[in-house]
Amino acid sequence: MQLTDILPLERRLVWLDGETHDFVKPEQSYFCELGIIVIEPDGTVKEWQSLIRPPVPISEKASKKHGITNEAVKDAPTFKQI
Image 1 (cartoon, rainbow, N blue to C red):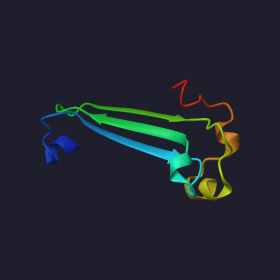
Image 2 (image 1 turned 180 degrees about the vertical axis):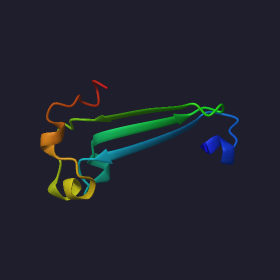
Image 3 (image 1 turned 90 degrees about the vertical axis):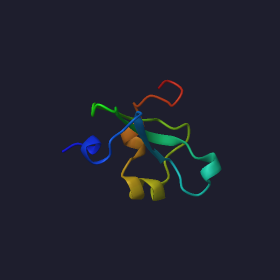
Image 4 (image 1 turned 30 degrees about the vertical axis):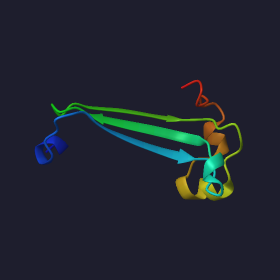
């Protein structure tokens, strides 16, 4: 069963999910992971995900929450490169 069987779509549905390097100051947070799911009205699904190297270290609190460490993103592209 596909989503379009339950929820017929007239337009493309895009789901965006991200994880950030810190939870203390949202206005100064940087992405360390970004994922996108696109569902077309015909049921076609496209997915994309990437780790992102933020310009500052990922806090220990954030790493404990989402499991993404500074080691995991050390060779990842920056947001600008993506």
